[in-house]
Image (cartoon, rainbow, N blue to C red; front, side):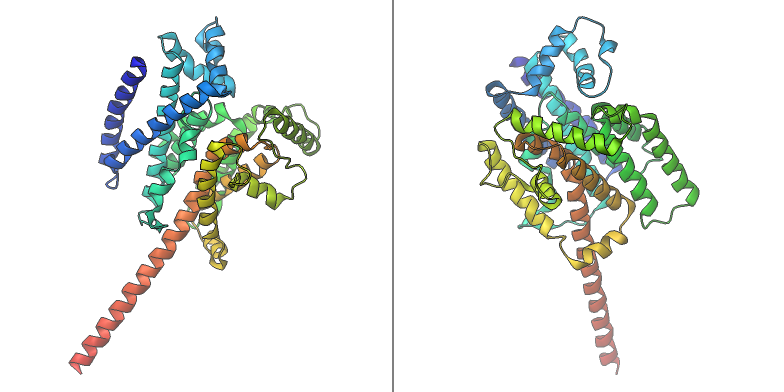
Length: 402
């Protein structure tokens, strides 16, 4: 316990150094909000640790694998689960116990929220109120997001990788190290998610409203497409399709088997195999919703899912399609990543517990799209009001001079 308290204090000190760095580069950076967010996230570290001690948890399996490893550190290097062990081993080798490793990964998850904050605020300076609460603050403090990024496992580092990538892609020329770091983290933890990110970046960059030289677009396309070709075997291996001769048929068969296995592996399974695609997507994005909550955690998540649903209603407008067509590359990239990941995951997710955990990876991308859409509408409204005010002032001046 003393070791955990010591780590929490050490991480708090490291946070201040990180905040000072970002304060010099971003005038909007709110250190007080980020410190509050850190304390909030550490509360969820405590909640998840209690949960893990009283329920089955992958974090226990990761720690057990570390205790059973007798080889060298580099022998652990690889994709998927192996990469989590690779990250964990140096800390374990210097004496970190299970609770201390949990706290370390919780801190990595917290850094993901810092980069999410930077990603949102740098591109969307306008503040939006939703349910009388600042929308960005609400998004940053969603409890389900913190719960699944506060433990030893894939959730915390993959979220960090995705948010680092999102922040870095804003200025890729000046943030190339962060861009490569985020891409590497995503790829080595979940190769298939890297595919969604690469496709999203390519399509967003190619179709964004910004005027970008053709050769630059070509370089991005060739670079991302080339990376996908190089790592295609690792991506296909996730579903065991690296030797497939018919990808579509084999993917459908593998998806059905995975869904069946997940459905029978826990009491929170839902049979999604017969669902039409819209209902599959609804299940992935918005369930559980009270009546199908599997436990107390599910009830808490249901409140959050209800807010997701209310936010989603905000974009069910005729002008949203027009907005997407004319939106910048980051908005299109976020939408493509969200949709492609959602489509793929709905074919293999049939367990509400797995759904609650997996969707934490991609929900921030649709939040960014919604936030940008609402901010643009507010900005246009402000411009109209200023224009009307200026016209009235001119009319008043003309009347007085006449």
